[in-house]
Image (cartoon, rainbow, N blue to C red):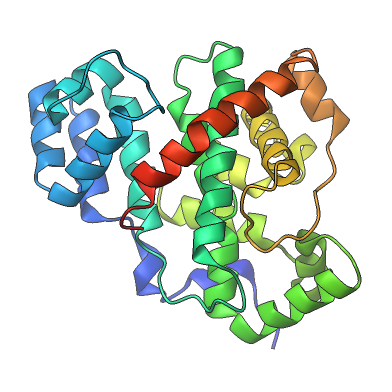
Length: 283
């Protein structure tokens, strides 16, 4: 029986909604009557999240000159939207457990995802975007649809992985050939189900086909390029064996000189191991 991407998300309790703490955090941030201390209080109610966020803000990810001791300080220094984005990224990392190692190493999956997030954040910073953390989250989540495929279509995913590696062909093309859709579509629909920003939904859905992004083409182009950069750097994998092709129009859209690529790789490499240590402690 044929399966649609929406069918994969039906009745799947574990991924049907985001952790309560993130929903409460978003409610507090969007409530004009709530202060920064109120927002910090919501975060402090989850000791695990508090510890993860303090690790991140005190790492090379930010490289602040002095240690950030409390969540209240972190909210003030980093900003509410940025801290919420980091909270989302770290929360999602804890949601997917028990995926078979013969499909994907979860360690390798999150290494690739974190590296893609770092590259997207670096490129966004180079373009002087005022909320680079949203690009980090988009990079972190770009392949999340693949985890749904591995969980809900385990046997078929194994067949698709085998076919892609032996054909040889790109894994997302093998997915589309076998299923009629690929992990990017599933991921975009998952973020839609979670009621996350439409920008994240579109970025994830079209990160392999950035010219199809109509509302957020620049953001999608950044993650598309970041994915290719970290594949070329061989920093983890979500199952893909080969380096996906670059869409030339995506690079043109960024308006950056090709010479910046060396700097992007250097910054990703410098931040990568520290980011792994701070974000994957309890993933």
